[in-house]
Amino acid sequence: MDLTSAKTLQDVIGAINTTNIGVTARINDNGDGLLLEDSSHGSWVMSIAEVGGSAARDLNILGQAQNGRIDGSFELRIDVSAGQSLQDLVNRVNQDAGAPVSASILNDGTATAPYRLQLNARNSGSTGEVLIDAGTTGLDFATLSRAQDARVVLGGSEGGVMVVSSTNTIRNIVPGLSLTLSGVSDQPVTVTVSQDHAASKEALSGLVEDFNAAIDRIRELSGYDSETDERGILLGDSTTNNIESRLLRTMTGALPGGAGAIRRWGQIGISIKNGHLEFDEAKFDAAYERNPDGVIDLFTRAETGVAASLKKTLESLSESGTGMIARRTGALDSQSDDLKDRIAELNDLLDRKRERLMRQYQAMEQVLSQLQSQGSTLSQIASLSQSTR
Image 1 (tube, rainbow, N blue to C red):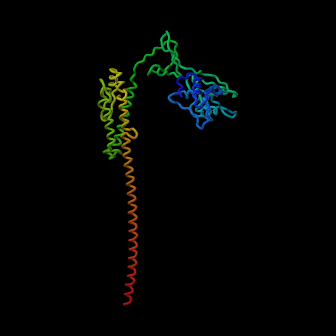
Image 2 (image 1 turned 60 degrees about the horizontal axis):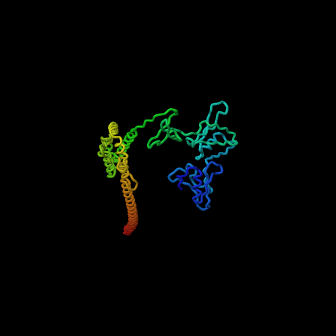
Image 3 (image 1 turned 180 degrees about the horizontal axis):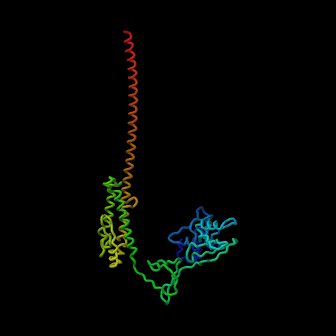
């Protein structure tokens, strides 16, 4: 259901009730939320899910119905008894994942009854406003900090636009610009905005570090230590060597998608030395100062930019099912299965040969026993013939 045109809760109720989908909407009995009731009485279970928006979450109606109803009430009711402690009450509040507040115990340092229950709204700004009905509990509450939004007037003294945020950070006040408010002022404050490429340098430095770590790991697994005569488990593996070569080719020489005055990695401060990448921040600063838009476009250009090209290269190596590593892994798995089958065949062959040798051994034992018996008989006959002479 598309609720993008709805501006009030009544608009939402009207939109639901006119769709004839077997759901009736109204204000719940507490008057603090939207109530949805299954009016079709069918076998299906009513449920609410988001599709590209946040209306259901904001109305607290996400999820499945209970007994044919979804109540968007924001009320949290906690029943307490005389035997429960203040800590028990705190635990009850904090154990409820849907509670609009978190609870803690405050010690005000007084000599008598120093412990107080403190409730803090989970949401910031005016959306975090909490109403408490202490009922018959005998608890008295005082507001220490009232819920309110951050407000900034954008414009000159002749007029302006009020900008509101539930936090002290106003995001995308203009595309790509966020402001963090650190204080209150009744005088105009001038904000100067300029490009800062520190994040770009940090990202490139991180790329170089990660690349070198990957190369070191590849060489560790595929190398040979002549001093200890230790061989890496992937020594001689062609796929590992191809991956190392491809990574080095990608990060040296011509830039992927390089155009204009910037065509090579060295022009933005990235070079290779002793098989590892090095990042020269001074060269990058100089390139950025000469042509900031060109450097930014070089990395962010869709399809042909550095980021897109590196992503394609890494996916061709590591993508599940079709990447070079996945194909090599599949080949190794197949070889492993073939070897297991061959081992099983050889074990079966050895078992049969063992049985045949055992039968031959037993037959030889029987023949030997017979020969021994015959030898004993001949000895007895020889003794008799000698005694009759």
